[in-house]
Length: 178
Image (cartoon, rainbow, N blue to C red; front, side):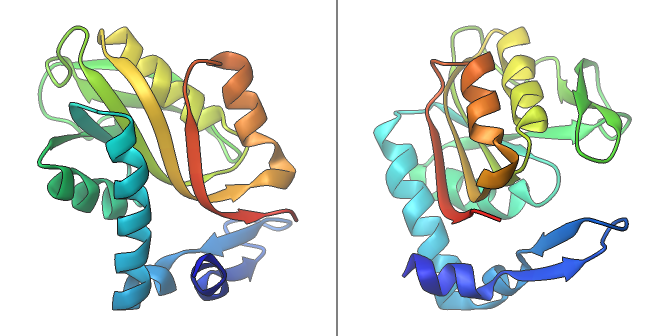
């Protein structure tokens, strides 16, 4: 079934800039059975981590974080880019493949010691993932796992996350070696 999921992901050459091969995951969520399978796989893995809260990264991470939180009977908090949240926030620098940005969460979105599982759509170089983990930790949360639909293994993102946070378990459904 993961081959079917992988076959739905399209590569768009030279997007968002020349030289980038963008992995478009929208066909995965447009196909009801494929989307359901992704949510089932993420939920099954997440359940083993015993989270108390799901944190999803803007914006495609919301596509997976919401359904997983719902299935587990948990709340979901959001990790957004700078300036998108209306109340008091905590911020971290979040460089990625394209630019240096900042991630923010509401200052009261994570309880001290709360077990948080982070979900995103894709792991590339891992820099955004590392920043998200650091943000949850800055709020006093304990990150119990990081899940993504796609791992771009050739960019060594999981290796980079493990270097920065060796105690955080990582799960991905589909791997692209190139």
